[in-house]
Amino acid sequence: MLGRDNGRRWGMSDELDEAADIARQTGAHVIADDARLFVGQPATNASRLTARERQVMDEVRRGATNDQIGRTLGISRATVRTHVEHVFAKLGVSTRTAAVAHLTDREPD
Image (cartoon, rainbow, N blue to C red; front, side, top):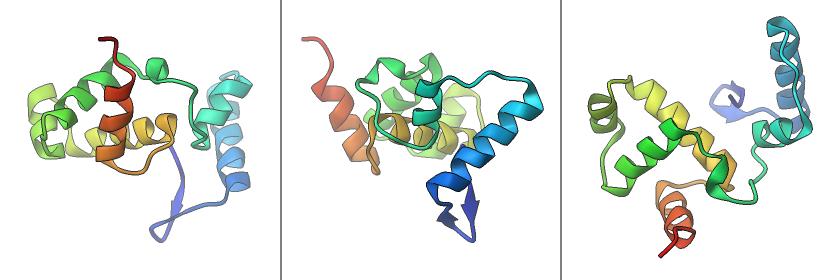
């Protein structure tokens, strides 16, 4: 998750520090590719989306709001927002429209 301070994103070094702290606290091993995704650098393709992120984006593509997506998938609006933010980071986009366009452009015919 990207850190925030008074509504603004922290700098990349703060994000990396936060990621390292979380990894140490949980005993996780962070690989370089995961660290790049954590700080929001674009992934090379959409295949890195989780199954849940794909479900959320399918609903976004249909024009559903976060509240509607949450009700459909049985998750909170905040969880939907988190999934959408993760998709944005993985795809290197900043809007729902750009994310849908990115995913649509890469779907097999």
